[in-house]
Image 1: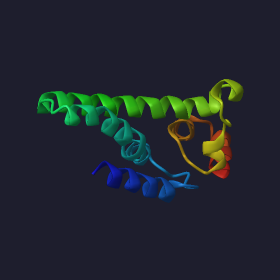
Image 2 (image 1 turned 90 degrees about the vertical axis):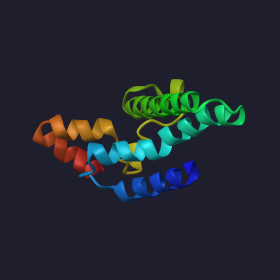
Image 3 (image 1 turned 135 degrees about the horizontal axis):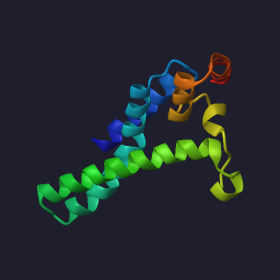
Image 4 (image 1 turned 60 degrees about the vertical axis):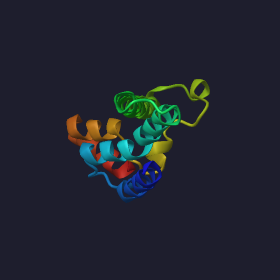
Amino acid sequence: DATNIIAEGEVLQLMNCNDPDTTEESYMQVIYSKTAKLFEAATLLPAVVLEQSNEIQDALKLYGMHLGTAFQLVDDVLDYSANAEQMGKNLGDDLAEGKPTLPLIYAMRHGRPEQVNQIRKAI
């Protein structure tokens, strides 16, 4: 189940690439289907192996989903605001790859027209 959802998330992300009209809802579906689902599976697996109750399994799934979502949101913000050396990765890769992430979606919704046009061209 998790593998299929993660694969579907990859496809959805590819469909959103270079699309400046990507909605916040579509973006959130991508991060749920990719990062959040991966974290959800990682937090659930030990409880399944240890045969924990459904209540514990459900709580761990929910925790993993929220942790994965938070992780991805922070990662997307850091792509525009962090120091590349501290992060250990190139910054701006999401934009270079045409991925409309929440910071860009938000900026297009709330920016001045010239800012919005510049972001649309960059995506």
